[in-house]
Length: 491
Ligand code: SF4
Image (tube, rainbow, N blue to C red; front, side, top):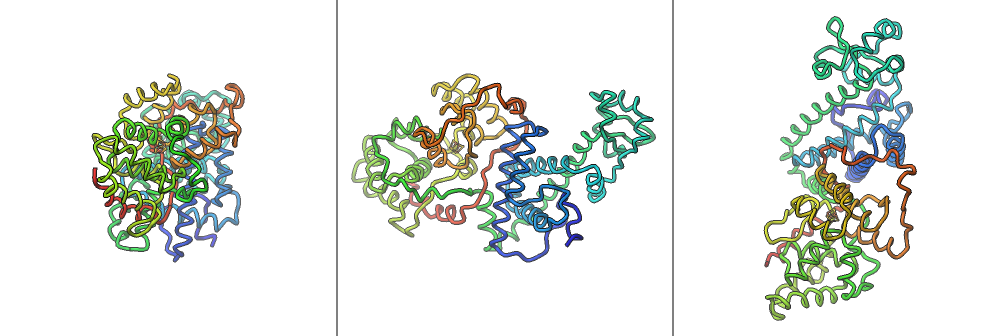
């Protein structure tokens, strides 16, 4: 067993070959997605080298039973899970450029954290293990070269040189550092400080993983022909892990009169936009009806209420009552599982909204953080009285393609809390959390701006290029929705 995983870290060069059950396949994959989502959130909220970042990430690794301390010898199960889950997500996340970019970014951040947590000795072993045989130089040699190392390595004073480990690296591996004049060169070797070694290791990993993802994408057709795996993989990349918002405890507890107020106080921006468009135009095209209709069902509208709500609005526009009853009413009953296949349809997750069916001219569905022009988004936020600094923060997150984090920021600003306290994956989750907060079910976590926030990252410095992606897997909803969409095609 130890031979199989000689090190707690790996570059995932060899795919697993053992047989595993579909149940384990899915649970491993879902856990890794949860972990990567946390990696993404922490990477945006905290400086990656800060103690808070490290503590929170270690807690998550422990919780999900991934290897969290390289020193633990007997963590075969954790290493196995790490290995297998990486390869499953590689299959799910090779399918598009966006998904590949997101996966790559989170895996790199995870490896960076784990590499930097290694002890000196284990780091050396890992470098050998992945054929990056950089040798740490001895203390004697370091003392001998101290002046040169200090003079050639920017931002390293004498003390830092003494504290840091230096590695002797072949020039080919240190080209970037050499070109930027950041390292001492002697007899064909660069003397690279530890803090730069992780950049070399990560570059190497990035190259390998990008190639592997491209190769995996090419072999997708053969995987897609496996009818057990294809739906699982597709849901892993498009769905969402979390409560099922189709089953609502509060069905019937919301009155139609409340919806206008709720749309301002507790709807996420996507739904607020749809509600306003519906009120203004007395109509929504089918993408909007799908997204908004299922959301309303999720917040507790009964079928009868939904029929009344849509009818009242539509007959104020160009649709007469007869046409509504014959066409639109059927599709609403269908979405409540009262027609056709009698499937109870699930409200869309953020991921589904962000990744599929982008709106075109005249549509109001989609995610405003993903699909709106930044200038229009800015105007909309201004009209909703978001402060200029809040708007800047949201636009920075949007620029970094962190759409759900931008939405979390919008939640914080509109609810006057400093910490949203949950990881947003679903518009109905936004609603539930907002209601809980507004009804006093959760104490607003208003922190003093100068207390304990020193490690909080200034988002404007954030330049990672990943998009916000929720964790996965409601294993039936998407497939079921395909059948439903046919009933909503009439504009
Ligand atoms: Fe809606 Fe999710 Fe986008 Fe927020 S992030 S606006 S909840 S789709």
